[in-house]
Image 1 (tube, one colour):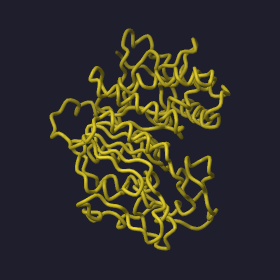
Image 2 (image 1 turned 120 degrees about the vertical axis):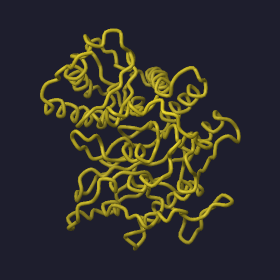
Image 3 (image 1 turned 30 degrees about the vertical axis):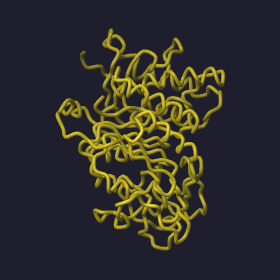
Length: 381
């Protein structure tokens, strides 16, 4: 395949940003405001490639700019078909990631599944640690600060994620996976466990977009703003402090008078210190886990970059807030496809999304991709 010039980046970036805003605004409704932007983006980005692709159906892509923040799978062609219906997309942080595919590495340990964390962990209450578990064995934990912009946030419980991880644990086989929910869904578990073969985190993700600007509820998925404290002078922060996931005790850390308290707030900066060499796949079953600060030509700084640098060979992550019911269904189907052994992990996700798209259409009378299309696969298939 030869080089295909898609033209100026600015129009593509603009349409991609508009599409992302529209699909988030529609949410789980049946409005179709996003469709014109979806088709326009298809015409700008994918239509010029069709002639070169020929019969190719599996595509490796390393998008840049705002294109790195949306799943190409949900773009519609003029015939109304979503690209996922005809193609399998495998995302790369950078193109050179392909060079590491197929390398022989030390195998990982048992899968680690975490969900439905108790974000509050009542005052003075000690977490129920599994036998032999110690506090932050590598000295990380509270030593790593959090973004000051998180002071106005609070994380509500996610009871559906308990059902999700228990169902996945059953699919993987009784006793074959380490499962932690409620008060045991601790950050400390991440530091204790070395290179699980699969790391599945079903919880809230967070992404702080504009430093120094108060984020409304609809701008930060899954969180409730408590007090608007915008306007104070703040130092510029590392982008790695502005995205992450929440585990047990996160709300207690946010309410702490100690500005350095961060137990349960697992920022991308902390994730860089995890021991994931040998981890085949990380699944971030949370809202907007694929996002981060866009640096043109350098990919996205955030969770995706952090988990990759920590050693994970592949990631499944979301590009917008995800609904509990459909996400649970999609993940259960995905893991069933994985353990079947008949397809790669990337293909397993695509097939799960196609099935969920059909479920959504039957359930609601429309196939709004907000409900089934948020997740992408990045890394070695």
